[in-house]
Image (cartoon, rainbow, N blue to C red; front, side, top):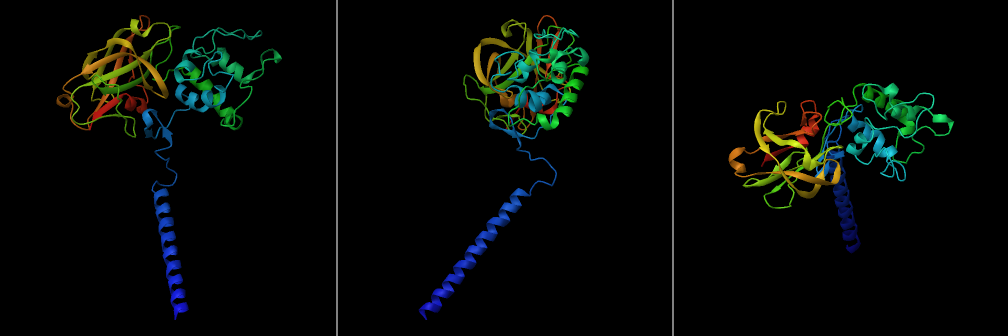
Length: 327
């Protein structure tokens, strides 16, 4: 009788374990199959401040080139990691150290003026170094690749992407073409805090900064960089806050205050120096909950005229990054 009871008890235990195992397997399958087959996982790409979003980069843009080539293949230790130029540590340093920058090692048979000559890949040293061994003793770039680089498998496509980016005007991350040697200013990031605080508001999965409901006053920090002009010397440093995604000029203009350097996260950079700030009061009376407000910065470096950052040609994920909403 006792043995029979033990046998029945063991059977019940086995059934219970099988049911639990089946439950966990079914739960796992449901969770992993929520996305339709072939659709990208919306949590594949991590953006600043710990948020995640689905971002499809144009491989023929400077951002796509940086993500696919310059960061994983060229910014390896001891090479273009800031040790010497070009500097491929960030998108901005990549752009600034390529476009209209003087050539260090010249091609004796075909001298060139710039590493990247916008609109002319054939006269850009960058393309030459990726395809030709100068003098037979310089090697073809990259000289070596790290394990996280797929250059060996995709080099032909990547070289074509570089060529097309140059021939299409070597546009910056905001879609602005380079037309003068004095390169247009760039935005490095934006962040918002409660007024007088250093506590950064977080972003949603699309990159939009979330302002908690009930916030009465807030400070908006914008990081602006220019290769030839100090951030504090830039003129027309103002921002338009607009509800229009496609027409940023339909909004309210705020003038920036120059401030002592503040360090906050930037776009794809963990630490960025901010020198401009605007303070806004009565936040809840200006915008309604869940309205997305877009930041359009207007900057003049004295050579390129007033530049809109981001502009109407900027990619959607950048416009989202430079925006906020009241919860």
